Length: 165
Image (cartoon, rainbow, N blue to C red):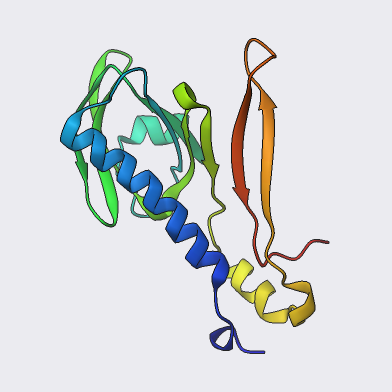
């Protein structure tokens, strides 16, 4: 089966969930962060369209989690990316992150989180080789204990159309 003959529900679901991240950041851009809301955003620093200082990329060669809470400036959100200046070691530092590079998003104030898997060329080839019956979508809900061990954070992990070997 050719990859072009497969409806990519996994990508559509991931795009829909990333639109939640985009909407949260857009709200923050337009109105500021309400109440106790704050965001942890994890992204792949090795994504070719991520723009960040080289010293940060050297320190975090694969992935970094940034916090949008008290010290952030110049938040700009578009359909394809967000840009923001954050404080790293007390230095105001601009970064540019395409939504394709985002691998995780959380708002701990409401115990909400999403995890994404970046699609690679190998993933596409693997999908192409799967028989149809092995490519069932899976949407998992993962719980992890919070600091007080009583509340649980709900994280939705998307792992659709992946080979479960």
